Image (cartoon, rainbow, N blue to C red; front, side, top):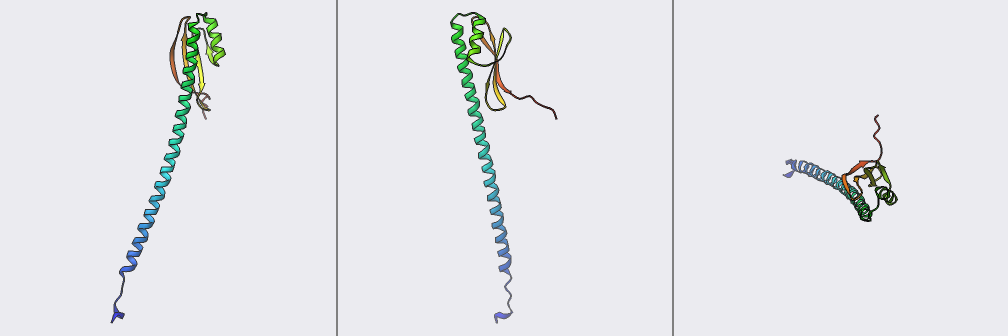
Length: 136
């Protein structure tokens, strides 16, 4: 009596289940890859921020040493020479001194100071590229 009945519902549901499992596995792998890429980006961003703030702290130390030199009542030439001993100066043209503290291989924290006998003024303090841009 059961010989004449056909059972067709089992194959379609199995194929549907296999398709759903494959889709879920694919989405899980894509989610994992995306989150791993975000993790790498976050770590690189953290390292960059740490390097920037280390350069910023070094610049503050240099400015504190310059403050101490200014308090000692030396002449401008003596102050400039003493500053040159503290840090490598990018340029010094009488009134302005440019101090460059490296952040990374290609960047530095560039601080421009306007120096007078009794004090100095920070004109700018920004990140700058160390290497020159070359057009292709």
